Amino acid sequence: MIVRALQFLFALLILIFAGSAQAIISQDCLDRTPTSGIYTASRSGGSLWGNNQFGYTTDSNISMALLHSGLVAEGASAYITITPLDDKSNFPGSTANGVTSLNYASIWCAMTLALTPPPRTGTNGAEFVSQNVPSTMVAGQRYSLTVVMRNSGTSTWTAERKHLLGAQNPQDNLNWSPNGRIALPASVAPGQTASFTFDVTAPATPGSYNFQWRMVEEFWEWFGSLTPNVAVTVTAQADQCTAQLPANGTYTASLSGGTVWGTKEFGYTTDSNIPALLVHSGLLADGGSGVVTFTSLGSKSNFPGSTANGVTSSSYSAAWCAMNVSVAPVPRGINQAEFVSQSVPASMLIGQTYTVSVTMKNTGTSTWTAARKHLLGLQNPQDNQTWRSPDRVALPSSVAPGQTATFSFEVKAPKTPGTYNFQWRMVEEFVEWFGATTPNVSINVATSAAGNGATFVSQSVPLTMRAGQPYNVTVTMLNTGTTTWSEGRPIVWARRIHRIPGPGMSWPVAISMALWRRASAARSRFQLLRRRSRVLITSSGACCGNSMNGSATGRPICRLRWRTALDPWRS
Image (tube, rainbow, N blue to C red; front, side, top):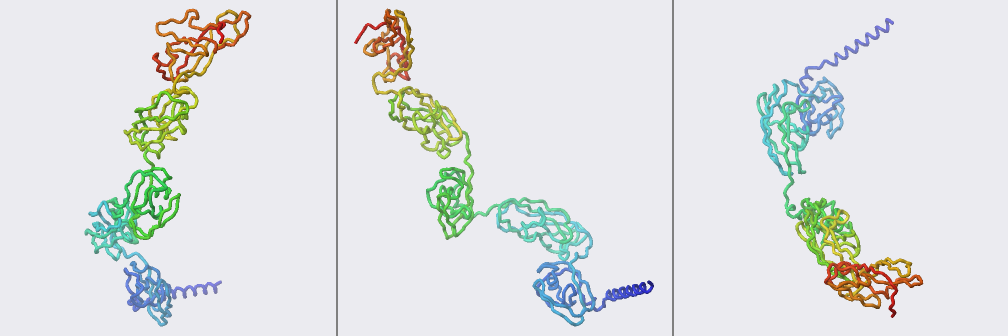
């Protein structure tokens, strides 16, 4: 045990002696070692022997050694601490980071390099003094700006300690400087000011950009106050192509209309046909409308062509102004309408065609257009097809608010005689009906152009009768002719002609405003023989229209009431 302890102690003494010997550096090597300080890395400038792990010869070029060792990038500067290593031999050479170091077999003083913060003296402090910065700039344009800061600390600002003006908001942004830093114009002692005058290039993309700065000691700390932030508005460059853009506004897409050059992705030439372009780009379907905005893309060449959505665009190799196209929906506004007038015959013949007109006024805030499917639609009942199929009438043209639209169109009278409603209202198809309806017109549709016409409607007749007893019966007829059934005119009922009493005349007392017919004494059952009966109309004007002068309007229906008795007449 004692022997082993003595062996361990002896080995420890050897190690201590060897370390002490290694730490002793000759004064000659100390004198040969360069001083620590700020150095800039470079690929050239002298010779280089060794490497940073083994050590460089003390006469090696420091700038090349920084790049070879990888401590600093080419062209960059940093504070380098240089440590002497005393004499060495057999310095190995190598190639690294584009720099070649050489071998050296003889004895020479060695050194190593380290990247360290520079020695610090005093404290950093800064105050904002003033700045000259425009609030608006044009994209891509250069501007000369000035920022003045005061050294309010106790340390001198120097290039060696890398005191710089640095970009903020966000920190280290590159909007105004390629590396986000502005160098000192000169060393600045405590209490003095530094005027940083430098050129900036406005960002290429229009928008709002923050302009704000603060002092920094690189690799050590940010310090002092921030400059007041300036939100700089960067606007697009005015180019000649902007003047070539089509006017923004509402356009309707069309499969035809002109030539298109380019594509949506690359841009279209400013002289392309807009309606066809809208279909080709897929922004609108054929016949669709939208609010179109055009944006200049400047001058371009080699416009590609393509076929899309049924439209073929052409290629164009020469330079021309290009544009981007965007589409927004057309503002809807409010639909409203007022009736103005109409021209419609009061009577028609079955199956005949007539020209009618209806005039409506746009009292809303939206323009009536074919693209939005503003139409005149049938009413009473809604969407009926009595007068035409389809049951819509197209606009003659677009109708702005305050203007009127006159719809002139043909209708065909129904094939069945009768009275039919003629009434219309404005509609935006698939959206809403709106505005006033036209006044209803009850049109009498007759079978012939002149003379009497009648159609049976209904009757009330007992199926059995008691011999010799009077009975009341009712027959309702429809006037389907063009003449009015009126007082004083002969009404032919089967083979007998009877005259309705005129004004001041009384009805025959014997029949008491009715027709008599008697059943046989044998109590036989008879059918009412209308062809062999005499008929007197018991109502007045209601049977013959709206007036007694014979001018029928509407659909007159006469209700004939009589009593029955045996008809003694025979043909």
